[in-house]
Amino acid sequence: MRKPEFIYVSYIETTPERLWEALTNSAFTKRYWFDTEVRSDWKVGSPFALVMGDKTTDTGAILEADRPRRLSYTFKHQLFEEMRNEPATKVVFTIEPHGKIVKLTVTHEGFIEGSKLLGAVSKGWPAILSGLKSLLETGEVLAIPPDALGIEGFD
Amino acid sequence: MNIAKFKPAIVYTIYIASTPEKVWQALTSAEFSRKYFFGNAVEVDLKVGGAYIVRTPDGALHISGEVIECNPPKKLTVTFNVNWPALVEKLGPTLVTYEIEQTGEAVKLTMLQSHDRPLSDDILSGGRQGWPAIFSSLKSVLETGNALTIKMAPPQRMLAALKQLGIATP
Image 1 (tube, rainbow over the protein chains, first blue to last red):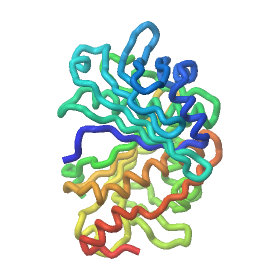
Image 2 (image 1 turned 90 degrees about the horizontal axis):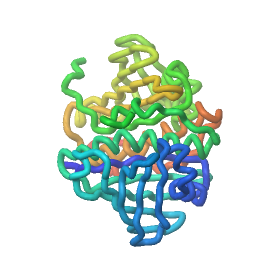
Image 3 (image 1 turned 180 degrees about the vertical axis):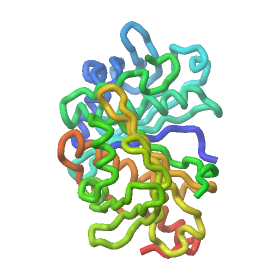
Image 4 (image 1 turned 45 degrees about the vertical axis):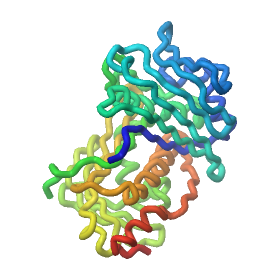
């Protein structure tokens, strides 16, 4: 039986350094991450937060920050009651040069069996990472309406 | 074919700045598919029961199947059997479904690779390696006009697992 986790791979025409910046610069994330700012000083042990408008949706701590190769943080949902009670999970970004492009692997793991959070992030990551790829390759924001994701409460 | 007992083993979703018609064409046209599908060409007779074929760049038959569901430009389901002796006999048929949905100004494309029995992670590693590269490049072609050059080694883990099952691979 496969453990409950979500893995997404995307190939992007960019450089590892630009991709790292895109994942860690709050002004940049606001443009593709559904108006969400990532907040951290990206030092191991430092706090991490996702802030959407005036709401902190998720929090954690930096586990690894090997610029521009590997970034990981703990990830605990804060907004919705049902998911707020689930234990902290872990997100890992792996950035690998692949010829003239970059391979990005996002692994989100550590979910309990039957996790609601896993269902939500499985719908969220493809939209976020599609928007990230578009913005890096075309300079244009991909307009995806939040309610298209089918995440309860996210619209 | 009764597809009720098939369950998705691999799901990949990607959002593309395009239209459902253009995404449909990208998935079903030989000329377009060559740009993003490792040079392979999709040839499909777009009606239920029609042939679905993928040819390698040298014209050899790589995947053969038939159209199970065809609802342009929203849904296409095909059998997707790699043309290796004993593969279907040992693992059963592979089903691939594309779902295309307009979401605001973007198109949501979801691919589901389904099987009628549980398959090992070793066997599924081939699809898990290949699909993200195919769809990343498809998205780039539609949004920028340029495909990505993604050099990919053969899926060794899957090939080793197939060999163990007595399935001959190139």
